[in-house]
Amino acid sequence: QIWRYNPAEEKVYRVVGSGHEALRDGVGPDAALNQPSGLALAGDRLYVADSEASAIRQVDLAADATVTTLVGVGLFDFGDIDGIGPGVRLQHPLGLAYQDGILYIADTYNDKIKRLALATGAVTSWLGDGTAGWRDGDQPRFDEPGGLSVTSDALYIADTNNHVIRRAELATGAVTTLVLVDPAGLMTRQPAGVPYSGKLISLEPQTVAAGQGSISLTIQLPAGYKLNDLAPLSLSWSGPETIINFPPDGATLSLVAPAGPLLLPASFSPGEGTLLADLVVYYCDEAAASLCLIEQVRLSVPLTVTAEGEALLALQYEVALPAGLAGDN
Image 1 (spheres, helix red, strand yellow):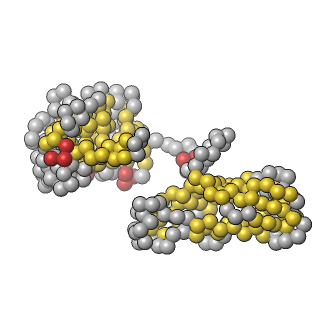
Image 2 (image 1 turned 90 degrees about the vertical axis):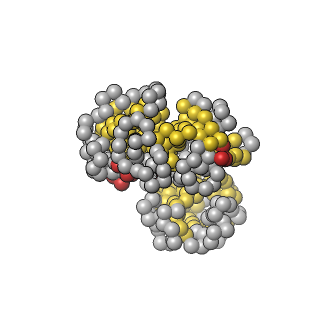
Image 3 (image 1 turned 45 degrees about the vertical axis):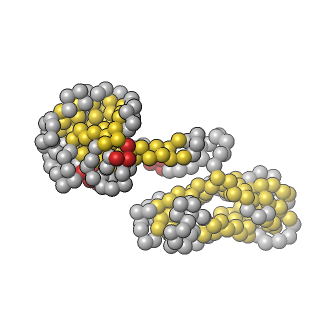
């Protein structure tokens, strides 16, 4: 099925799809889809990569969401054949992008990028020779390309099994591999100088002794979940210098799947203030490792520093599952 989300109403509405897998045209819920994947919008027409049927479907939003099939004839009819009409074959297409009358198709299991000219219905192979691989240039190869995104002069391709993003020039078809100059900068974190507007949790007030000490944060994950060992957990502390000072090399930790509490040395001075911790945790289901989640939160801790007391400020934060998953474990 295809659903529409209305942000103003915070509601979702079904647009097309009966809920049963089939290649059937029709109006709205009378039509049937087969594991729809990539979407592309062109005016009042929505194009759908109907992956399991190796089909491309068109939804006319101005005509009561009428669905028609542009490419594909049946659930088990797939292949790699260009042309016009019912003889055209794709194999499990996952991605679509629209630009200037052309629908770009990630023909995933054929390791190709194809073009569908909407004015004529002609489908042609554009990039890739049908052999899985990783090769740039004017005779490129891909390995199960997936998502597509198009600009005025280039098509960006999620080259799934190569774990890279490829760029194809629309004018020439020349393909290059996108080089990310700052991979760490792609991690989820709060931009500097931007007022915080995310999730804020206030912890219980704490007291710590003046002098040299340390801060400890224990993170408790939901039952059945573990830290993602492919993405570093990050923790950044901040607070008024009148009561707390951090090491010269900074108050930020970035660790992959730490085994215990997160510990940072600090120097405390008598007084009161608020300690802040910006935390980003990547965690996954132990039984289904492909289900991974992100917890991004700011912890606020009212802090009093006194002449006597413990030198260790020990804190704990319990990560809660999103509401939609809370009943799964």
